[in-house]
Structure formats: structure tokens, C-alpha cells
Length: 515
Image (cartoon, rainbow, N blue to C red; front, side, top):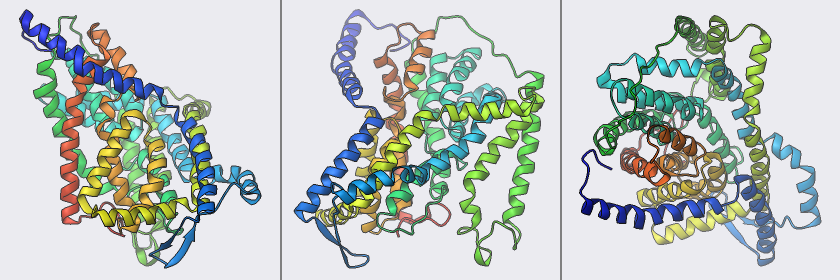
């Protein structure tokens, strides 16, 4: 796809390439991806597989010596009378005590209100419209990175806004929308602020790490330093790809031009008061941690290991909730307490599928722990890796690439991590790598292929939006436009990962590369 119209010979050659190897590859990926069961079905299947493997492992005498304790660990069968009783009597408890469940639902109370009253959409629009034309791509990409704090909201809100912004300044609207989508989806694990995804994945990491260390506690900020620095890598890369690679390859846009309406006075006023409330809230939080005897400090005045770190989830909830209340009251989106309750209820309503997913994931992970399959596999796996000499950077780069490949077929970050984390977190702990470092590697792989996978729930929405501006834009064409983002993100992020590893930099508060 180029601005200059190719000759007939060139066109025929392009058609052979586009409708030959490239499209067959895309069709194959789509066909395989569509045949995969739903993540919920996968967890049900995995739970039964664990029960069966636990019985086979017990019969075969699978065991290993834990190098940390020098104690022998054997696989325990769950396919016994005692195992069946344990499964049935603990099913509700497994679900209720599943770490990610409460973390996500509490965070969504604040995010749901902010989205429901229109604060998130207004804030993103304000950031984009307040920027000069020369920095418009940067503004959209940076807004996309920040939009990750609201979970999937940015994937719905930002691309259509970005398309209109590009169109209003005489640029190709599809370039704007794909830049927005790529920055939200591809940069899903880069952010300046600890958010819901951090809390979600930390819960799965904690569950997996407790296979080896029952006392292990993960905090949502354990990858924060790396993810914050990632913003300064991903943002310029996305800007460069958009301006230098993607937009020049798009055909000239011949549709109607559009003007972008600025924020209404009431929305401006709402954002002003939301900003004031945010400052007040942050000052309040600072008072709870900065003074020597502050209530959220830990023993001996510590901050890294403290009630503050254990309170990040409700703090994040408040960071969304209180500004949203101010915005909603000013803009009259909130007229009574019933409107607030309705917004919270609507947010919880959108979490129905996740709650069901969490139920079955909780059973699978618990059965995996009970059976001792995880710790035996991790010990044996670590031994194999040691014998093969696969340690350090080659090991983790391979893990990143495997995660990226799986992400093409299974879009849910939590669903994949619930499976991969259960095996790789304890396995790498046996090699003296911290759960935080393993999670960091996974998050890179989980992000870089988000822009190109048709299995990502919001890809279909993007395709429909693209066809609004170009009716000939098909699945293959859209993926071809998105591929440069994935490739460049992978190169840049892996390079940053290598630098981090070589210099042994801390990953986040109290989190390092090694155990």
C-alpha cells in the first residue's frame, strides 16, 4: 500500500505476495486461533488434567528433592476418596481466597465510576487537543500508554478520538487510530502509574510462587521501575513507526475532512475540579506515608515492606473514585448517590466473565498446588535447564518469545499467566530468579503481539472503525499495518530487558532480579 499508484506489473506482484504467502500465514493464524477453546473451557480441562496427572504421578512415584530445604517432595494423587472430598469441600474457599479476585474487583469500583461519568474519555481528549500539531502523534501515543491504567477502556475510547484528531489536522485517520491502538495494546505493560493489571498479575504471581515458598507475598509495584522506564522506550518507538513507516505506506485519504469539537465548558470545569481533588487525595496519601510515624509506614519506619505497599489496591481505587465523583458532580452526570451506586454496579457487571474465569482458574491452581506437581516439575525443569546450560539472558529471551507466541492465540493476559506462571515462576525460583523478574519477562512477551492478534477482543472493533475510513481495509491489511509496531516494540523492549539484567537494576520497590 503506497501513496504512488504502482504499475500493473508491480500490482500483480504485490497481489501475489499479499494474497499468497502473507495471507495464507494470516489465514492459518486465524484458523488455529478460532479453534482454541474459550479460556474458561481451558481451565476446566486443565483442572481435570491435573487431577489425572496427579494420580499417574503418584502411581509412577514422581518425586524430587527440594534444594531449598533438602526435603523430598512427592506427587500426591487427587483421584482418591480423600482427594475428592478435599476438592468438593474446598471449592468455595478456593474461589473466595483466590488472590487476583479481590484485587481486581476493588480496583474496578474506582475505574468503573471514572469511566461511567465520562472522566476517562474527557481526560484523554484534553491531553490530545492541548498538544501542537507537531507533537500530535506523541500526544496520542503517550495518552495510549497512560490509558492502560484504566484497563481496556483506552482500547475503546482512544482509537476513534485519535482518528478524528488526525483527520482534523489533515493526516490519515487510520494512522491515528492504529497509533492509539498499538500504544494501548502493544504498550499494555508500560505505565508510569501502578494500575489494575499490576494488581491482577501480582496475585497470580503470588499464588504461583507459594508453590515453592508458602510465605511469599507479591506487591503490585514490584515491576514498577522497569515499566515506568519502558514508557520512555515504547513512546518514541511508536511515534517513529507511525510517522516514518505506517502513515507513508497508507494510500492518500480521499474522504471527507472533519473538525474535532473541543471540550464543553462544563467538561473543562469538571476536569479542573477532578484535578484539584486528585491533588488533595495525593497530599492525603503522602501524609499517611511520609512522616516518620505515619500510619502506613512499616516497622522501624520502613516503606518498602509496610502497610502502604499492602494498601496499593485501595489507594488506586481512590485515585480513580474521588476525582470521578468530583467530575460527575460538576458535569451533572452524578445527581445523587444512586448514580454512583449505578456506575459501580455497571462496572461490576462488566466483570462477570472475569469472575467466572477466576472461579475455574482458582480451582486449577489450587489442585496444582495440592498435587505437588508444580514443585516437582519446577525442580526437574530447573535441573534440565541447568544441564542444558540455559540460564541467564538466553533463557529469559526464549521465555519472552514463547509468551509472545502464545499471546497470538490466547488474548487474556491473566488467563495465560495463570497457566504459565504456575510452571515458570517456581521453576525459575529454583534457578534463583525472583518471581518479580519472571513476571517482568512475561509482561514483555504478553504485550508485544497484542497489536497483531485477531484473538484480542478489541481487534474486531478496530477493524470496523478502520473500514469506516477505508471500506477495502480487511483483516490482513490491518494486521500488516500493525506488524511494524510489534516488531519494533519487541526489539526495543528486549534490548531494555538486556540492559536491566546486565546492570542488575532493581525491578520495583523491594524487588530485584534474584531471590
